[in-house]
Amino acid sequence: MSNEGIYRVVIAKIGLDGHDRGAKVVARALRDAGMEVIYTGLHQTPENIVEIALQEDANAIGISILSGAHNFLVKKLMKLLKKRNIDDVKVFVGGIIPDADIGVLEELGVIGVFGPGTPLDEIVLFVKENVEPVI
Image 1 (tube, rainbow, N blue to C red):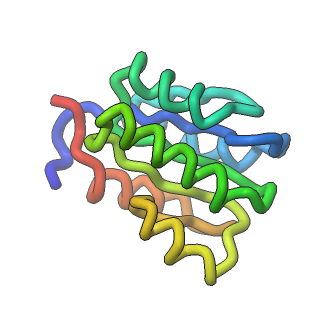
Image 2: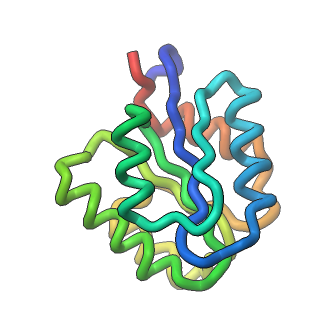
């Protein structure tokens, strides 16, 4: 994929998870790499995240989740994206995700899963290589 153009990434804390330090660190790294980042704040629903992505003309959504509800909440998010015919917005997930659940998330359409300690430059490069920028 091209590295030219604008990347608009929504970083969202989904569900009742109240720990947002990691999401803020990733948001800052993406912003420092020249991307437009929209941080949604805590306690977002899948419906809110889809609406924000639409309003902001995002081309990627990064979900941060530590609560253990990743399979349920990401499945709901992906169904909403599909229902709204939003197939050009790529979704990646970060947080405490058991290895056994990574394949489940990928089957739902998640393009990448990042655990604690993932180097920030790896996440930035992943987005640049796997998300088509807005022209």
